[in-house]
Every structure is written in structure tokens, then in C-alpha cells.
Image 1: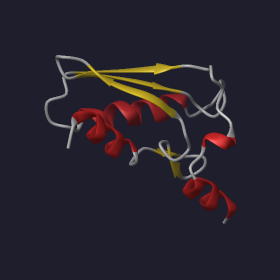
Image 2: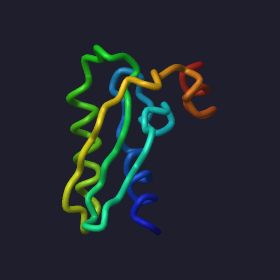
Image 3: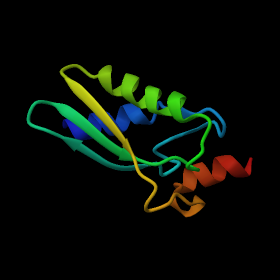
Image 4: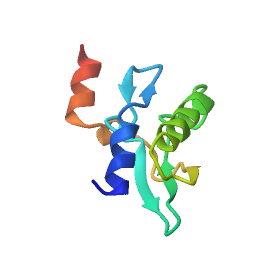
Length: 99
């Protein structure tokens, strides 16, 4: 499995504590880049700019990625454009919220 796919897989384990859904299915991950030195840059957003769980979620992303063997650096960049909306959620996440 390539490194980008490994990063995506571990991010399924990062759960938004407020919603109880992983950040990938929530549509919070916009891009994953791997550089030549196995540094990882994740471009992501949060459900709201003032999200009180900012530190918890970003810390979870960093911890999950560093768990992968060979990762030397993790850079998480939060962006607010494009803004997150429920349309970005996977069908699975939408179903979970309906329960």
C-alpha cells in the first residue's frame, strides 16, 4: 500500500469527539501530500472555524500519522476555503448522523 493510502487509512481512526464520526467520512480531509523525505502534509478543515475541539482533532491527526513507520514530519494545515458543509460527508457519515 502506498504511503498516501496508509495516511488516509489511519485518518479513519481519528474521530470528531462531538459527532462521533471519523474525519475522513465527515469530509474534513481535503488533500494529503507526501514529500521525498516521507514528510506528510495534510490540508483539512473543521466543521466550523471556532471549533472548540480544534486541538484535539489536529493532535489526533498528527498522532495517527506519526504511528506509520518511516514518517519524519507531519504538517497539518487548516483551511477555511472551501468551507465545510454537510454535503462533503460520505453517505456512511450521513447515515450515522440520522441514527
